[in-house]
Length: 223
Image 1 (tube, rainbow, N blue to C red):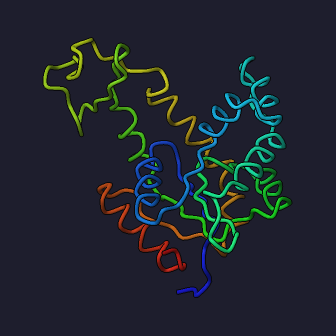
Image 2: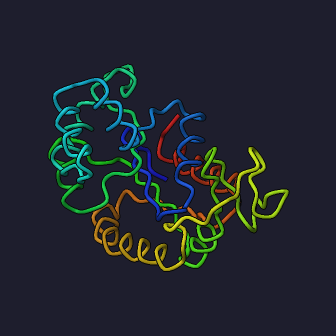
């Protein structure tokens, strides 16, 4: 058990690993500020900041926001009081970034290398089972699962009664492609952050995974 206090925490895991659930639980338990790249992009674009306006030019044409712009956005966001301890040191949970070594290098150049990386480890077949079974309502956005949360009426949304659909990005072939891309991108990142990575078995009930992640955070000084 380390005695260092983790202020800068990164949450990593494959698609379908349950990062959203764990992030919300850690935020609620420890009062961390959850930094989601998607949320930050939308907020900065709406606020009309210089970096937000620049990012919006890429989003408006459906292009990926360049790493250097994303890092500037993160660096700007973590200056806010809600991302700081009383002594002014950083205190946040970053979800969705970095995904590649160049992104990690860019964060390091801004002094934002993580003190702790929580890696949600879920086997490929388990992720495929989770995502492939999802059925989404195109009318209200409700989500069911054929195995874990089946609708009361087969194929129909419990909330509004519309017909559920199996989205293209929830098809097995697409899911396996996404997982292969994640593995290719993240393996070097895991090696880079090896000394501060704590792996959590994500192939368990959500409450068990959250409890384990919270235990890891406490062991690294998060209170």
